[in-house]
Amino acid sequence: MISDLPRSLGRAEAVLVGRVRALGANGMISAIRKTPRTEPLCLTFTGLEGDEHGHPQVHGGEEMALHHYAFDHYAHWRKRFPRAAPLNAPGAFGENLSTTGITERTLCVGDILKIGKATVQVSQGRQPCYVLNAWFEAPDAAREIQETRQTGWYYRVLEEGDIAPGDSIELRERLNPNWTIDEVQRILYADTLNRDALKLLRDLPALTERWKSIFDARLKTGKVEDWTSRLGG
Image (cartoon, rainbow, N blue to C red; front, side):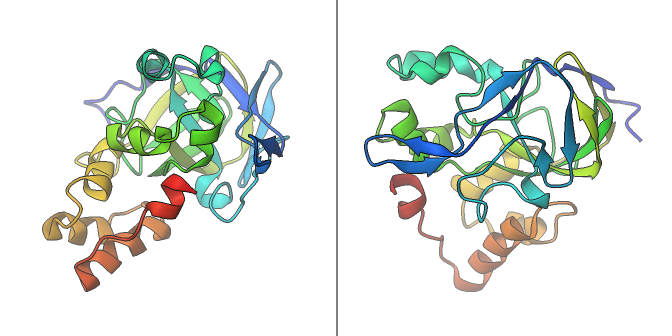
């Protein structure tokens, strides 16, 4: 039941897709360039029609089918990276869905949302990587984004259907009210060896197995995984 929560969270302000292309001086392969579409697009169990992923082993798939980023954060990043041309419009973070009023602090892992004709569930936050460094022409962009926890997040698709700009976004169910995306990421990136929290997150309903395995490994080893290659390339 969500009687104590607002059912309406707002509207989809932009729906974006992108193709794999070369990026930066080294020609790395990425589909981070997303462009807005005006027509309804089918959201399937593996993502939006017409969308691609340069590294499908870490992006896309059923557990990361749709990437959402809060346009609310753009003002901060424009001040921080004034030379980053991608920040002039939605899509700078490779997101498929852009909104205002919905952030990592207002959604919880496991939340079930209705977007247009599709039903989705928050599965995990987005882990920033070195592609953002090249895209924003800032060598520490990925690390800074991680530290702010303004990363965006992913959905798995529970019910396929069309989504389009202007579609309403409604919260239908909240499974884990104590675990906002931001709070899960606080444990992932800041309070990294909090054993009580790690135990809860290892078994958190609806969290991806990928992230559960990270928390389980920390419990077993007492160590934090190395982020160097992901953040720096």
